[in-house]
Image (cartoon, rainbow, N blue to C red; front, side, top):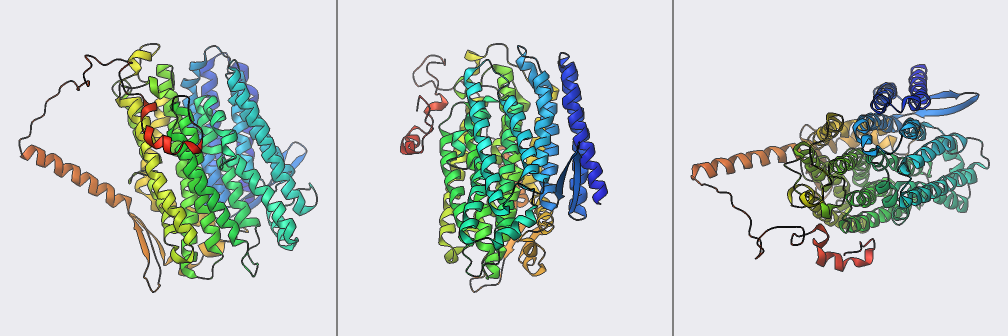
Length: 620
């Protein structure tokens, strides 16, 4: 298995490096360069994906990758395999989308884009595979950061974009420095100690050194993940400035490397055998940071009328859901109560599942916005509207993406949010702080729904684009429609069949070599209380209160379909007739841009109440 993993990783790495070297040479033939870039991502994705799938099916492997004279130590276990498959899939989908979308930038050559794109993908792959937090980690981080910096500043004639990219670069280098200094404080040298060795060193280190080192590592990864308040420093500007395909990779995939690092730190490096259980409160701190991120990031997103900034602030909010689940799992995991350990499993599965879900629906939202910008020349929601009849396929996939991020039953966000929130609420009197966090998360889901009602309604169903579009608006081409349709279908599959992903995630975490929670995921007694079903999954455990929870999105979808069919039958049975008429214009003779209701005025009263959260736009 080790030799097979080595071959697969070497093939994928070689293909991406060759693409970075050769494709820019033919960048003047824009479409051909795009297809070659996509083909290289396909071949590399198959190689990386095969390694990931084989690891999930079999077991973790350690191997080495030769980069010229340098040898990089890699660890491919179940957890890294999940991210490896995710990166491979999203890189391919976005590469195909970019073939058509980059025609939006006719004033720029594409040599730089096709040089940095495969290097960016390779850097993200490296981050989830390197088995150290020193020089091997540094190579992968710098490859990912520097290439993404040039991709963000692609439209370099805009000074605001250049400033945003520069700020991104400086803060990502700060994040790298924090992680490396923290790891070096444990190992005593920049020598490339493995994660398992770092875990041993952490357990043997004095308490003050543990706190300093792990604190630096966690803050560094939190900065990369966009956790409040660190994410507000760079994420909205960087994600809204980059070309939409790159925004999709930044928000959908790259910030997940920060989540990956946080989970590795909490469950692979933090001492789990301390007698007083003091480290469990680190999980509570992470959960608190998560709930602050999800509430403030989501409220800030509600205030935006630039669609890409709206999505970017929502990335901060959605990272909060993930951190809430991760922190809840770490806090409950240290308990001796089997019921709380069951909830720890549910919380961690929900967090990892939401990581996968968010990668898909957030990438889709950025790609949909790119399609709208490509067709209309604008990403300002106040200048959009009426696109449902002009761009019907894009409108449908946008509705699926909006329903997914809002957590509508039957779509991907519902299942993972349910797992995170249920694990918090079911903690009950054993963890009252987590109950409060769960209530805040539940309330924030309603704010997310309001935000995407605004995005979809004002972009596709209201009036507006007819007065602002620079040219005739029409549906985008197949190279942009097919990737978004694939992601929309995946959103639906993730929502209706969560048990499939639940099983895969449990297997991956069970195979998490060196993980503190692998014993929980391999305990058959625990899984008698957490059961995957064809319609969803359930949680129950023996206790005086007989506490339990059930989540079955497939049943909800079937019930909704039956209800709609019954309503249609009832309407026809009653002989009801409908008619079409023009809407009442509140006294105005005709609708125009001056008397229509803009998105900036939606939820004005609520936005005044939460002005203290910041990120107000000029017209709020």
